[in-house]
Image (tube, rainbow, N blue to C red):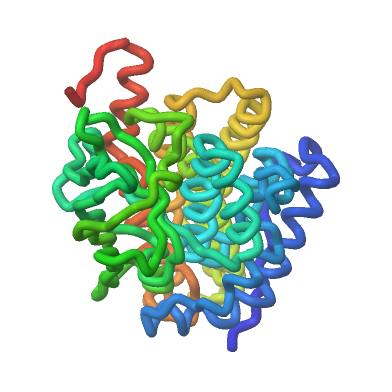
Length: 392
């Protein structure tokens, strides 16, 4: 069992801009990751098994819906606290952060924002304490970057809705208790529905043989004439903007989360470079290795301030979808580049499970695609600055 020696880099003293609550939340999450995630995560990834025993701990540290008001079971924290929690969890593993991110931003958020008071009271407290685990159904086999083309549909049958279709690449689906599913009605309007495990015709086959997010459970959502009670419709927002609003929250969490993965790779590479002796001295003394390490800490520092400022704007209600896209795209690219450079510093040891770098690198190959691909986020920025959509 490896010992977690991680030390967080803070080259520009970002801590000075954080409140005492921010630091307490972050440090508590960091300690939990060191104690509960780091000792078991390499084996979980090698065995391609999601460590379900972590779910109760994620709930205990407030990782499920941290910004949801306390009256619904959340911690009532601000957006920077949410980001810091995601950063620390992804420092442990992207797949574990995905579970928390989906639960918070893609399940609890839409129920809180778009649901009825009855739905909030029924689901949110149990989602916050981990009694219920949720997933989010938007992506389909034929519709990824173009979610508006979805084929999943529901019909009004008088006393219930009849749901048919399929969703793909769904984190948490194999064990989720509920799914927030986006489907078109008979007028082609997109709505959210809460589908519960056990409803006849609802199945969640698991996706196997992944090289990425191996410690995360991924699957499908299949709806074969599923009868959904009418009270399970989310009534307060419809259209494509409803699920995209959830994705804004998730992408914001990713922008913070991947900094954690990058910091872990940097910290591992820095420690290794100081200890690894070649030609009679530590490889950290060679110019090319110093170049790699100096560029890593520079990019991490830039990403830290980008997300901190975005968090301030989120707290003020001023962050735009395009700003969130920019941060998600920039930070994921930053993290995956650092993982690749860090792997080179470790040489052959970098590909082994004795170190976290290759696992982070493989995980980030998923993160760079999900919640909007790298290219689509670039085009979102392009649309924002030119006013001309390039993806239509």
